Amino acid sequence: MRWSQAFIPTLRDDPTDAEAISHKLLVRGGYVRQLMSGVYSMLPLGQRVRSRVMAIIREEMDAIGGQEFYLPQLHPREIWDRTGRIDTMAEIIMTFDDNKGAAVVLGPTHEEIFATVSTELESYKQLPQLWYHIQTKFRDEPRPKSGLLRVREFTMKDSYSFDIDPEGLDIQFDRHVIAYNRIFERLGLDVVAVRASSGAMGGKESIEFMVASEVGEDLVAHCRECGYSANVETATSRIGPVTDAAGDRSLERFPTPGVRTIADLAAFDGGAPPDRQIKTLVYLLDGQPTLVLMRGDHALQEQKLMDQLRVVDARPAHAEEISALLGADAGSLGAVGVTGVRIVADEALRGRVAMTTGANDNDVHLRGVDVARDIDVDTWVEVRAVQNGEACVDCGSA
Image (cartoon, rainbow, N blue to C red; front, side, top):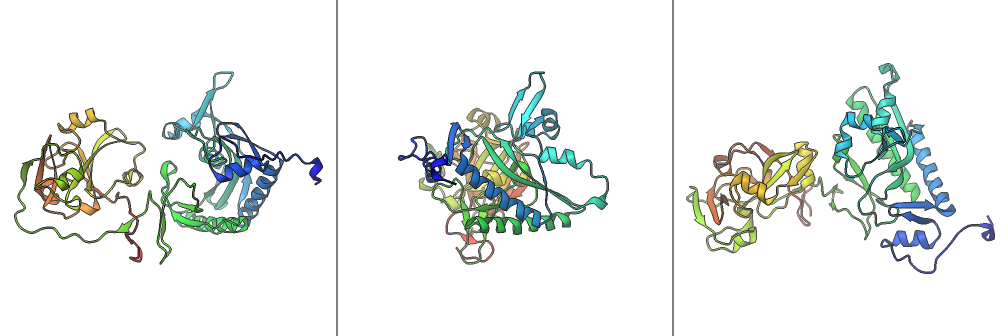
């Protein structure tokens, strides 16, 4: 190609609306141009790179037995209504009525459509099948700001396997891991495979391939000794043992005027250090009021809570909802003696005694709480957010 005949509109200065380095370089180098927020035009250089990436993906997917499809971007809304994902993906899904009044979805992903095509599989003798797809997707991302990442219109490679049994699914999953590692190696990307949450997509296992970046939007718990890696939404770690105090373990109410936080109670005369407090959070999980109990010095990882309890929608209760449910304000809440409300507790509280918690009476707390004796826990879960420096769950290193 002769430079004099090529369309490569380079820029001397960084675009004012670009934050990520990759975004600035793509625009300045003449690879892409922004049409609107989260929507980009691929210029000839960008399209050449895109085509080469797609060619590598196709070669590696074909090598593990994949068959390429090209399915529509326009979907009848009825299919999404049937699976319920019109609601669970409501924040990002794009819908409209066509000129005939029919409800239509711009595909954010293609599980529903591949499942529809799969109904033409007539016998188990046709299995296994591995189908894949390179197609435009549409997602109404609220704040596109990283160039070609998290955009509203983008190209995705997605694949789907159809198997006789779970063992076949595991085989297909492992083949994908091999194919993806080859793809990233050929693209020159230094990736880390991390355990992740399946989120709204569901499923028993999920792996994300990540590249370390100063402008990244995710955090990973990683052990340099054994290689354990997990998205913080699923990561676990070992916490040190806690020895509960001996002596009188009878329940005792005591006044705590002005105490509203874990730190307040730790500093209060007669209070308790954070690891001896029970923090009570009030959540609405799929609309059901739920008390979530955590150790005072631990933070809740909300995605873990949603995954383990298999709920789609989770949000903290509002102040008026908390008061109506427990009769007290945040800062004085507890689960002792509470009935008729679902109670879930983090595993770090199992077996703990001589703890301190709110009394569901403003400016009053309880000490001497025996979790097994005094709280009717419905479900035990591991929902604590891991912290830097904690022991690896696999090998014990930091």
